[in-house]
Every structure is written in C-alpha cells, then in structure tokens.
Length: 208
Picture 1 (cartoon, rainbow, N blue to C red):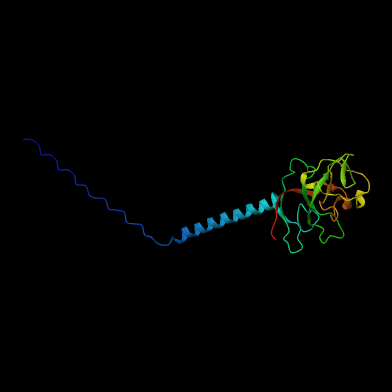
Picture 2: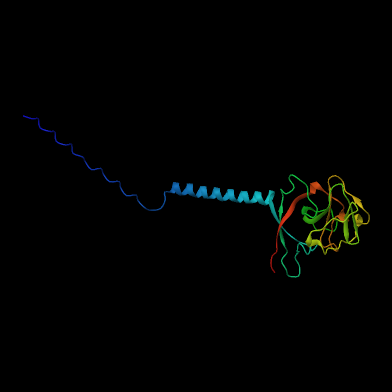
C-alpha cells in the first residue's frame, strides 16, 4: 500500500498595501523644500552680484563727450547703457582705439570725484603723442583709424595738447570722440594703468 501524498501547504494571500493618503505635504518636508528653494535663490543672487561686480558691469553714459559713438542723456532721450568687462585687461593692457572705463580724474569742476568715466585710448606706453591738424600723431606718424572714427576732428586744446607728450611705461593717452567738449588727457594728462578697470564691450542704445 503506497503512502498517502502530503497535502499541499496552503498559501495565504498577502495583504494588499494600503493606498497612500493624498493631501498636503507633511510640515517637515515642506520646510525642507522651502529652505532649499531659498538657498538656491540666494546662490543665484550672489552669483549675479559677483558677475556684476567683478566681470560685467553696466554703466549709463551721462555726458556727450563720446558722441556719436556713445550717446549721453539729454533732449528727452535715454542715455546709452554700456557693459564694461572688468577682466578684459587681466593678461594684457589696453590696445589703441579701445574704449576703456576708469576712475575719474581729480577734476575740480566735476560733481563727483569718484565717478566712472569712459574714453578712447589713442596713445600707448612709451609713445610720443601730438595733436595737429585735427589728427592724432603717434611718434610722428598718423595711425590708421577705425571706420567709425573717420570723421572725428581732434581739437588741439588743453594744457597737455599744446606740445608733443611722451608717455611713461604705464601711461595711456585717452580722448573723447566728441573732441570739442570732452574732458580728457588733453586737460588732465596721461592716465595711469592702475586707474583703468575695464573695457567697454557692448553698447545698449535705449529709446527714445
């Protein structure tokens, strides 16, 4: 007589998982989410501030000394806005015809002594600069101008424009494109390299 086969063990069904309750987030999770969002926003604002302070800084043009290249406010029009790259000269100095930004000269007639100014570089360290017949001469020769400066007539006025001036090893001669009204190196003399903090790299012309 054969042994009876054992009955198969009964398998109890697993209890189904209870459905997740839907509703507002628990206070702790909500607090973590809010803290993370605020931290990310603070980081973005900090990065934007760092870029504005040490990389690209916007400036509004307040005078007509660089017209027609850069338009100042007046007559109901909005002044141009320029972006200054503060890292442009981290490895090399300004080149001729660059528009540079620098701390203002000690001009007794200026409203502020610490305002930022933009002018165009025409003379480089070690060169001899002279203004004669509406032209800027460098070491006795007239350098070729960019196309946008073809019509500029440089006025020989100011203490440092009457005679040829020899620039030192860290000096630059800067002029405004609107030579008739610009307060520049013709009046305050050569510009020391340490006072130049950036290069104008973009111009935003605002309307009207």
